[in-house]
Image: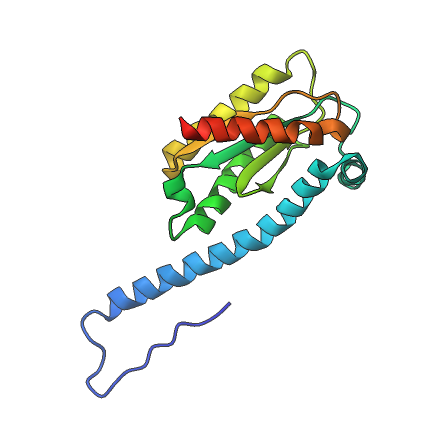
Length: 187
C-alpha cells in the first residue's frame, strides 16, 4: 500500500511526533478511500450510463447482469447540497453517499444498480411490481436521504422518476428525473 517515512534529526523526535504521524496517517487513509471510491465509482458510472443510454445498451447490461429487462423499472437520483458538492472532500462524500445508497438499494431490491450519473448518485431499480412500485420507491429514496443526513452529515435530497414499463424504456424517464432533482435541490 505504501509507507510513511519518519526521519530523526540530530535532536531526536520532537514532542509533537505522535500528532504529526496521526495526521499523516489520517491524510493517507483519506487518499486511499478516495482512490478506492473513484475506482468503484467509474465501474458504477459505466453501468448506469449504459442502462440509461438506450434500449440496446440496457438490454446488453441486463443480460450480462442477469437482471429482468421486461418488468417495470424506475430511476432515483440523490443529490447533495452545493456546499457538500464543492467541499474539498467532495469525492469522498460522493463515494460515501453511493455506498450508503447501495446498501439501501440492495436491501430493497437485490437487482438494483447504484452509481454516479452527471455528478449525482443514481439508483436504477428494475424488476418492480407495478402496483406497489411507487410507494416503495419513495420510501427507499426517503431512507437514503434520511441516513445521508443523519450518519454522513450531508445535505442530501432525492427525486423519484416515473415508473416505466420495462428497463429498456428507462432512458425515457432520465430527463424528467434530472429536472425533478434540480427543482428539489433549489428548495
